[in-house]
Amino acid sequence: MLLKTFGWSFAITALGLVAAVFYGGWEAFGLVAILAVLEISLSFDNAVVNAGILKKMNAFWQKIFLTVGVLIAVFGMRLVFPVVIVAVTAKMGPIEAVDLALNNKDRYQELVTDAHPAIAAFGGMFLLMIFLDFIFEDRDIQWLRWIERPLAKLGKVDMLSVCIALIVLLITSFTFATHAHQHGGGHVDKAQTVLIAGIAGLITYMIVGGLSGFFEDRLEAEEEREHEAEEEAERTGKKKSAVVLAGQAAFFMFLYLEVLDASFSFDGVIGAFAITNDIVLMALGLGIGAMYVRSLTVYLVRQGTLDDYVYLEHGAHYAIGALAVILMVTIQHEINEVITGLVGVVLIAWSFWSSVRRNQRLAAAEGKAGTDEKAEVSSAV
Picture 1: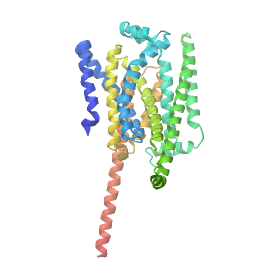
Picture 2: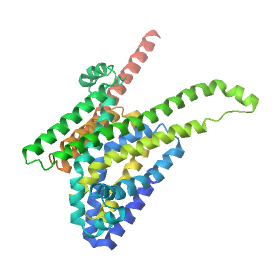
Picture 3: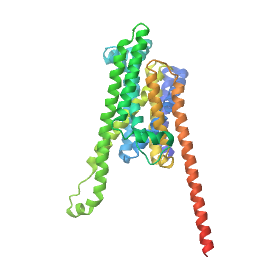
């Protein structure tokens, strides 16, 4: 089971590390390994959240996620995306941007770093909306009840998450503009860029999430009617297949997963420049990490880990909220990538530990109930 799920990840790791040695020697080997670990640590919470969505898909779409999705994640986000950033911000063609990335790495890194405020605003708003929609929803299972219970009540107010996200964006852009003005006004124009990028992130979330939810609801409604109509459909010989509907629902959930992965990748891509500005090594290292994130997602789904450890999804969403805040803060202030990675790991580990303790309490209660029942039977006899 483990080899079947992680087989491709192991193979890509071996090929990537060998390619790194041929490309730049053992130093490149070490940089690629570090980048892979960085990506996995920063994106572990991504795997947990992805698993919550992927478990609703069938085996076919899980396979698509591991194949086509990987191509999009590795070549799209980890290779093409940084080049596109440079092309857009520096107003140059993509071919010229690729040439810059390969032959003038220092200038390339400078341009990507210059684009960070817009990247952070877009990704931060997208992730913040995911967290807010989760935390404002009333759930049967609550992890940190002292927080989640009152917030669930507040969540009954329509569009509250959107209002809060927009307030955060306005405060961030206003603070950024004020800070820039006080220091000579060199980046005042970027406050507008931050505002526009944040709104774009919000719109992206609403469109992709809305379409995914719409088709998911239709799929659930169709499945409820399917059992009732099955006998009549078989009798007439004109059974209407739900494959098309399932395909639509799965496609938009797949699209949602890809946009979610893109948002999670922002901090990894930007953080990678702290380690190397070589686009080839960056693609190799982050690509290896992306493979493990996807394999881990499928592993969590097939093992039923989310069902056994019910607080994992909560911990992942809290990590998403923390990452959203960190991204917004990095618009003005630099935060060490180790801190960013540790925040997510700590929250995930805490939720896992809480889930284990919950399972132990439930097992103990069941054992006690069984002992009491046996005692009652014995006394009755």
